[in-house]
Image (cartoon, rainbow over all chains, first blue to last red; front, side, top):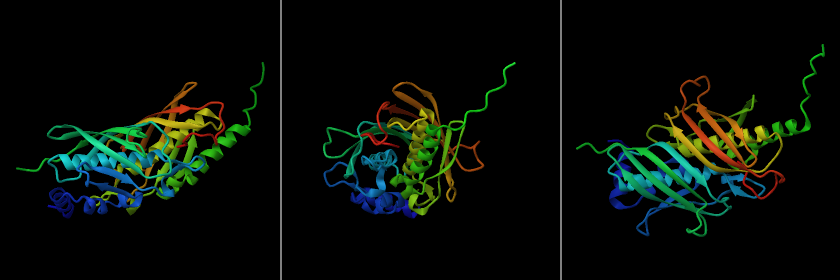
Length: 148
Length: 163
């Protein structure tokens, strides 16, 4: 049992995912947090200038939006599947729907399928209005089931 | 027998594109924050590099870089490949990007991404991209396919997102 698995297990048991978020350097670097207060898992990427992909608009970099979508999908997979190991991403397809403005961005995932080895999560990102997503993605992960 | 014409000198547009590609690779704020930089541009292909850094780690247990950092690298390389194919500064925006993660990037090593725009229509550019470690091009880390919308006839400082 790795220390990270303990963090994952504790996050799942207590419903506090912030310890796990804090354990992942890239999420800290991008300013990504996860909130479960509403009962649903919501990812948030706090705006910072380092996220900009086009300074003249300005607009967020597609890679930053992709990272929020992927991270939220990982946490959704972790949240709803039996695994206590970080899911391994196999493939992700991102549709960019609107330019990301320089404000906070949110994301939520829908766990669409779980097999023994594979989980499939669709996830949407928005800014002010959840009804107007700026991007959406479908991601497939490999998970390790807990040994009986 | 007519002699072969001299090869054309690089025109103003192609010099402008080369400068634009190098500048975007380095000065786009998110690229700069991640340490992404220009490596080479040859035969329509653009190669960028993402140096390994602790802050990019997605799994602290293994030290493997987060997929999101790879996404930023691939998206950036694909966009620059479209500029090269266009041959003149034109606003573009990513429509979609599919990334297959073939294997985890090796901790401690830079990831290179080489992108090529293989089809350009009036409105849409189709791009593919491969990510690998320097010297290990046979053992790909990731592959991506992307489509971009091309806003012909508009200035580069228009109202669209650049990669």
